[in-house]
Image (tube, rainbow, N blue to C red; front, side, top):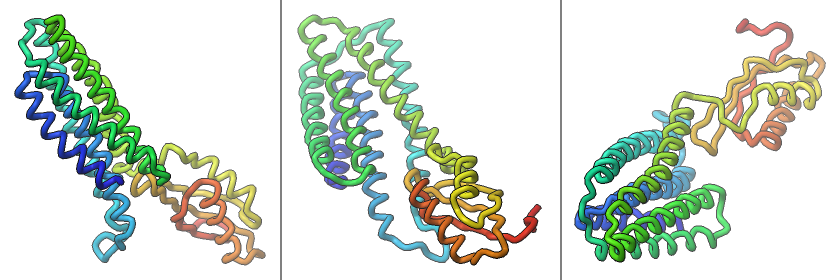
Length: 277
């Protein structure tokens, strides 16, 4: 489903760009930018599912998951540049309105709405993972962009009010800019090895210290992520010398997996003072 939805939306994006240039419609060009954001999200989701089946190698011991994060960061930056350009054009056309061709703009926007509706039904009707459901929300947002482009074309056709095009383009830019900023922010946080938003290091430290028998104290806790769905963790644990270390480590990993969703962790167990202090 992801692959088909990606091909459908990415293919029509180029049609919408051509239609926006031909009809001189900012709303179509802005919606094409939003389609680019959606196509990127769908492509990353599809690629992530394919990468999950690919093993790491001697060059990339963690595998190839970070490529999608890097691509998201670059695409987010390019979308922010697009937002600035459309914003400039919108204010220019508010000062000096330009003629647009409403019929071609309406036709392209209507086909875009239908395509997004098909893609949304494909993704919404499936019972796949959160990755797919998230992609469906991106497509739902693009439906609103197509609706705005249709509204602008109809308004110009029936009333001749040329301000409808730049004003509704600004509406799409708000949606697109918000999505682009979130993509840049989240991908930059991952690339900078930031702690995943859903993890609280103090809560992890306290939970392991109180719920796992034999754990005296937990320190040097570090968390980061390969992708938004793959958190990683390292920590040191001071363990009672009377406890069997294998049992303690197994219990700690079970808590990390079941309570915090961390399925890959590295635990250094210690008796007495930490050698790294």
